[in-house]
Structures are given as structure tokens and as C-alpha cells.
Length: 144
Image 1 (spheres, rainbow, N blue to C red):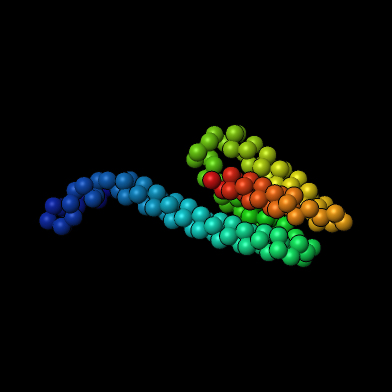
Image 2 (tube, rainbow, N blue to C red):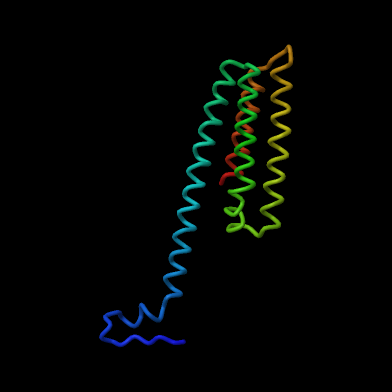
């Protein structure tokens, strides 16, 4: 059944004909809002990781290391589950997926190295600082 509106109905014809354009604009707007929300959450997580990393360098305690590892795990989980579509827009899926998995493996290895340094009797503050800085760089690389 087709409904035709008379011109005296008061709606311009272009509004009645081009409903596809408004749907596209709405979906683009919704996508932008979602991207901004996830970006904001990731910014907050990165700031929390940086704060805990500074505290870890200052105190060099196992409880700070545990909290640092937990925050990094949450951030990586967010990047993989919710933030992956950022990479899909920039890179083909096969390249983006392998890059993310490679960075996750590297971050895990650096966290193991960091734990070994903290548990070592010969703690080297410069090595610990370098590892924390390297992990932060990897997370920023994943984020950008």
C-alpha cells in the first residue's frame, strides 16, 4: 500500500523522499558518539596505568606490580574487545589483528621481565624504569 501526501500537507518533498540520508547521518552520528565514549574510557585507563606505573617506580612493591598488571590486563581486554574496530578502519583486519596480538605478547613478556626485576635481589632501578616506560610505549602504540 502506497501513501501519497498532498503538497498542502506541509512537508517538503525532499524530506519525504530522502529518508535514507537521515538514517545514514544518524548511524554515523551514533558511531562517532560510541568512538568518542570508548576513546574517553581508554584515555582514563591509560592515565590510571601511568599513575600506577609512577607509584610502582617510587615504591617498587609487589602490591603495586599486581595492581599495574591488573590495570594493563583490563586495558588490553578493552582494546581487543571494544577498541578493535578503530584498527579495522585504519588497516585491513588481517594486518590489524596480527599487530594487536603481537603487541599483547610483547607487553606480556615485558610484564614478566618487570616482575623478575622486582623479585630479584639485585634490583636495578634503571632497568625497572626502562621496562615501565617500554610498556607504556607499547600501550600507546596499541592505542594510537
